Length: 150
Image (cartoon, rainbow, N blue to C red; front, side, top):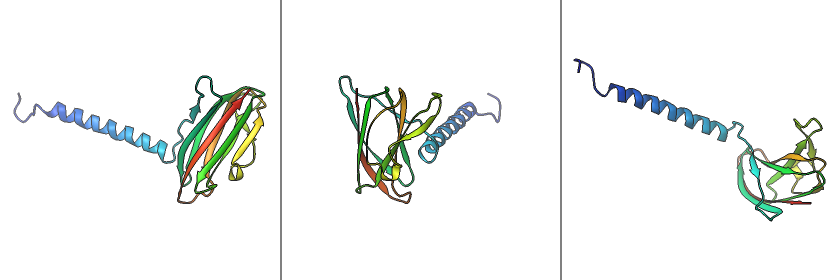
């Protein structure tokens, strides 16, 4: 050992690097939760079923996004209830003719969409976005039932 050198210097360096990586990972997670864009949750049905129910919460101006795969001419039905009453609503986007962009809206604007039932115009992914009616402080607990029938 050299005078003035510590055996723990490499450990301190590893500790600092580890701490830096931890802070970086935590910041990335916080970004996705607080304004960063996270991937939508994929909706999958249990084998032999045509319906699923999702219960979740949106706060402030948060949005909850879900992706659903469906085929042309299937009937999609979505019903949402929330507490406080009618505090959450949804809108649906589907694939356009080019197959690249989610560019047409099914149903009405999300500010009044509590139920939707319709025959899907194309095969592909559909994006369902749940949002609070008011973008002010507050919390909305919702329960959304999604049904796909041939």
